[in-house]
Amino acid sequence: MARRGPRGGGPAKRDRILRAAIKIFSQKGFFNSKVSDIAQAAGVADGTIYLYFKNKDDLLISLFEEKMAEVVADVRERVAAGDGALSRLKIFIENHMGLLLREAGLIEVLQVELRQSNKFMKDYVPVKFLEYLDVISEILELGKREGTFRQDLNVTVARRAVFGALDEMALAYVLSRKRKYDPADAASEIYRLFAEGLCTTAQNREGRT
Image 1 (cartoon, rainbow, N blue to C red):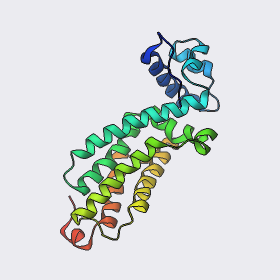
Image 2: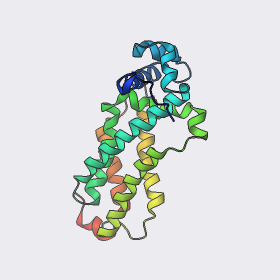
Image 3: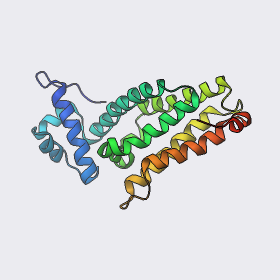
Image 4: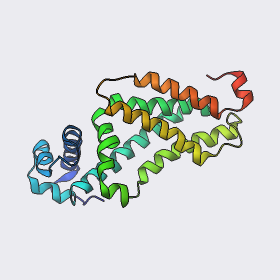
Protein backbone atom coordinates (compact mmCIF):
# COMPACT_ATOMS: atom_id res chain seq x y z
CA MET A 1 0.00 0.00 0.00
CA ALA A 2 2.50 2.59 1.15
CA ARG A 3 5.62 3.48 -0.76
CA ARG A 4 9.00 2.84 0.70
CA GLY A 5 10.65 5.89 2.14
CA PRO A 6 13.41 7.63 0.21
CA ARG A 7 17.03 7.18 1.06
CA GLY A 8 17.92 9.13 4.14
CA GLY A 9 14.32 9.33 5.31
CA GLY A 10 14.29 6.23 7.40
CA PRO A 11 11.41 4.60 9.26
CA ALA A 12 11.49 7.25 12.01
CA LYS A 13 10.17 9.97 9.73
CA ARG A 14 7.51 7.68 8.28
CA ASP A 15 6.37 6.73 11.78
CA ARG A 16 6.25 10.42 12.72
CA ILE A 17 3.96 11.05 9.76
CA LEU A 18 1.66 8.19 10.79
CA ARG A 19 1.45 9.48 14.36
CA ALA A 20 0.69 12.96 13.06
CA ALA A 21 -2.03 11.51 10.83
CA ILE A 22 -3.70 9.86 13.83
CA LYS A 23 -3.72 13.21 15.62
CA ILE A 24 -5.08 15.21 12.69
CA PHE A 25 -7.65 12.63 11.54
CA SER A 26 -9.02 12.28 15.08
CA GLN A 27 -9.20 16.06 15.56
CA LYS A 28 -10.54 17.21 12.19
CA GLY A 29 -11.99 14.08 10.62
CA PHE A 30 -10.73 12.37 7.49
CA PHE A 31 -12.52 14.52 4.91
CA ASN A 32 -11.65 17.81 6.60
CA SER A 33 -7.99 16.93 7.08
CA LYS A 34 -5.42 18.16 4.59
CA VAL A 35 -2.09 16.60 3.75
CA SER A 36 -0.55 19.97 4.65
CA ASP A 37 -2.06 19.69 8.16
CA ILE A 38 -0.43 16.30 8.63
CA ALA A 39 2.88 17.55 7.27
CA GLN A 40 2.86 20.50 9.66
CA ALA A 41 2.04 18.24 12.64
CA ALA A 42 4.83 15.86 11.62
CA GLY A 43 7.32 18.69 11.10
CA VAL A 44 7.99 17.86 7.46
CA ALA A 45 7.44 19.57 4.11
CA ASP A 46 4.15 18.84 2.32
CA GLY A 47 5.93 17.05 -0.51
CA THR A 48 7.62 14.68 1.93
CA ILE A 49 4.29 12.98 2.60
CA TYR A 50 4.09 11.89 -1.04
CA LEU A 51 7.53 10.29 -0.87
CA TYR A 52 6.04 7.77 1.58
CA PHE A 53 2.33 7.63 0.66
CA LYS A 54 0.44 7.97 -2.62
CA ASN A 55 -2.35 10.12 -1.21
CA LYS A 56 -4.50 10.68 1.87
CA ASP A 57 -6.40 7.41 1.40
CA ASP A 58 -3.14 5.49 1.13
CA LEU A 59 -1.94 7.14 4.32
CA LEU A 60 -5.11 6.15 6.16
CA ILE A 61 -4.99 2.55 4.96
CA SER A 62 -1.29 2.26 5.81
CA LEU A 63 -2.06 3.58 9.27
CA PHE A 64 -4.76 0.94 9.69
CA GLU A 65 -2.60 -1.88 8.36
CA GLU A 66 0.41 -1.13 10.54
CA LYS A 67 -1.44 -0.32 13.74
CA MET A 68 -3.70 -3.35 13.39
CA ALA A 69 -0.59 -5.49 12.99
CA GLU A 70 0.58 -4.17 16.36
CA VAL A 71 -2.83 -4.79 17.92
CA VAL A 72 -2.96 -8.37 16.60
CA ALA A 73 0.56 -9.17 17.87
CA ASP A 74 -0.26 -7.70 21.27
CA VAL A 75 -3.57 -9.49 21.74
CA ARG A 76 -2.07 -12.83 20.66
CA GLU A 77 0.54 -12.48 23.38
CA ARG A 78 -2.07 -11.54 25.98
CA VAL A 79 -4.47 -14.32 25.01
CA ALA A 80 -1.72 -16.95 25.10
CA ALA A 81 -1.46 -16.36 28.85
CA GLY A 82 -5.06 -17.48 29.37
CA ASP A 83 -5.87 -20.84 30.89
CA GLY A 84 -8.47 -22.31 28.57
CA ALA A 85 -10.96 -20.89 26.09
CA LEU A 86 -13.13 -18.98 28.56
CA SER A 87 -10.14 -17.25 30.08
CA ARG A 88 -8.83 -16.36 26.65
CA LEU A 89 -12.20 -15.05 25.52
CA LYS A 90 -12.35 -12.82 28.60
CA ILE A 91 -8.83 -11.50 27.92
CA PHE A 92 -9.69 -10.76 24.29
CA ILE A 93 -12.86 -8.86 25.17
CA GLU A 94 -11.20 -6.89 27.97
CA ASN A 95 -8.28 -5.99 25.74
CA HIS A 96 -10.53 -4.77 22.92
CA MET A 97 -12.50 -2.49 25.22
CA GLY A 98 -9.33 -1.38 26.99
CA LEU A 99 -8.02 0.03 23.71
CA LEU A 100 -10.67 2.74 23.99
CA LEU A 101 -8.67 4.19 26.87
CA ARG A 102 -5.11 3.18 25.94
CA GLU A 103 -5.30 4.24 22.28
CA ALA A 104 -8.12 6.78 22.22
CA GLY A 105 -7.00 8.76 19.16
CA LEU A 106 -6.18 5.69 17.12
CA ILE A 107 -9.46 3.96 17.95
CA GLU A 108 -11.44 7.04 16.95
CA VAL A 109 -9.71 7.04 13.58
CA LEU A 110 -10.26 3.31 13.05
CA GLN A 111 -13.88 3.35 14.26
CA VAL A 112 -15.10 6.47 12.47
CA GLU A 113 -12.75 7.98 9.92
CA LEU A 114 -11.61 4.76 8.26
CA ARG A 115 -15.18 3.95 7.26
CA GLN A 116 -15.39 7.22 5.34
CA SER A 117 -12.64 6.18 2.95
CA ASN A 118 -14.17 4.89 -0.30
CA LYS A 119 -10.92 3.17 -1.17
CA PHE A 120 -10.89 1.25 2.09
CA MET A 121 -14.53 0.22 1.97
CA LYS A 122 -14.53 -0.86 -1.69
CA ASP A 123 -11.06 -1.84 -2.82
CA TYR A 124 -8.88 -2.75 0.13
CA VAL A 125 -8.64 -6.31 1.48
CA PRO A 126 -8.27 -5.85 5.27
CA VAL A 127 -5.70 -8.58 5.88
CA LYS A 128 -4.83 -7.52 9.43
CA PHE A 129 -8.49 -7.22 10.39
CA LEU A 130 -9.06 -10.79 9.22
CA GLU A 131 -6.10 -11.87 11.35
CA TYR A 132 -7.79 -10.18 14.30
CA LEU A 133 -10.93 -12.22 13.64
CA ASP A 134 -8.75 -15.32 13.42
CA VAL A 135 -7.74 -14.81 17.05
CA ILE A 136 -11.41 -15.08 18.02
CA SER A 137 -11.80 -18.17 15.82
CA GLU A 138 -8.85 -19.85 17.53
CA ILE A 139 -10.40 -19.23 20.94
CA LEU A 140 -13.74 -20.65 19.82
CA GLU A 141 -12.14 -23.71 18.23
CA LEU A 142 -10.17 -24.31 21.43
CA GLY A 143 -13.39 -24.15 23.42
CA LYS A 144 -14.97 -26.79 21.19
CA ARG A 145 -11.95 -29.10 21.54
CA GLU A 146 -12.02 -28.67 25.32
CA GLY A 147 -15.70 -29.45 25.45
CA THR A 148 -16.32 -26.04 27.03
CA PHE A 149 -18.22 -24.62 24.05
CA ARG A 150 -21.09 -26.25 22.22
CA GLN A 151 -20.03 -28.73 19.53
CA ASP A 152 -22.64 -27.35 17.11
CA LEU A 153 -21.18 -23.85 17.41
CA ASN A 154 -20.73 -22.18 14.02
CA VAL A 155 -17.34 -20.53 14.52
CA THR A 156 -17.61 -18.36 11.40
CA VAL A 157 -20.86 -16.81 12.61
CA ALA A 158 -19.82 -16.66 16.27
CA ARG A 159 -16.58 -14.82 15.66
CA ARG A 160 -18.41 -12.13 13.71
CA ALA A 161 -21.00 -11.89 16.47
CA VAL A 162 -18.31 -11.42 19.13
CA PHE A 163 -16.51 -8.78 17.10
CA GLY A 164 -19.78 -7.11 16.10
CA ALA A 165 -20.81 -6.64 19.72
CA LEU A 166 -17.42 -5.19 20.63
CA ASP A 167 -17.35 -2.98 17.54
CA GLU A 168 -20.81 -1.57 18.23
CA MET A 169 -19.98 -0.78 21.86
CA ALA A 170 -16.68 0.82 20.85
CA LEU A 171 -18.36 2.93 18.16
CA ALA A 172 -21.06 4.08 20.59
CA TYR A 173 -18.38 5.03 23.09
CA VAL A 174 -16.37 7.02 20.54
CA LEU A 175 -19.41 8.86 19.16
CA SER A 176 -21.04 9.71 22.50
CA ARG A 177 -20.40 13.18 23.84
CA LYS A 178 -21.23 12.03 27.34
CA ARG A 179 -19.74 8.70 28.33
CA LYS A 180 -22.63 6.40 29.22
CA TYR A 181 -20.61 3.41 30.34
CA ASP A 182 -17.19 2.35 31.51
CA PRO A 183 -15.29 0.16 29.00
CA ALA A 184 -14.28 -2.30 31.72
CA ASP A 185 -17.90 -2.72 32.88
CA ALA A 186 -19.03 -3.16 29.27
CA ALA A 187 -16.35 -5.81 28.74
CA SER A 188 -17.60 -7.77 31.75
CA GLU A 189 -21.19 -7.70 30.51
CA ILE A 190 -20.26 -8.68 26.95
CA TYR A 191 -18.16 -11.55 28.26
CA ARG A 192 -21.02 -12.78 30.46
CA LEU A 193 -23.50 -12.71 27.59
CA PHE A 194 -21.27 -14.62 25.20
CA ALA A 195 -19.95 -17.08 27.77
CA GLU A 196 -23.50 -18.11 28.62
CA GLY A 197 -24.43 -18.51 24.96
CA LEU A 198 -21.29 -20.36 23.90
CA CYS A 199 -20.95 -22.82 26.75
CA THR A 200 -22.41 -26.30 26.88
CA THR A 201 -25.26 -26.94 29.31
CA ALA A 202 -22.92 -28.85 31.61
CA GLN A 203 -20.41 -26.00 31.62
CA ASN A 204 -23.11 -23.50 32.50
CA ARG A 205 -24.19 -25.65 35.44
CA GLU A 206 -20.64 -25.87 36.71
CA GLY A 207 -20.22 -22.12 36.50
CA ARG A 208 -17.72 -19.91 34.71
CA THR A 209 -14.50 -18.39 36.01
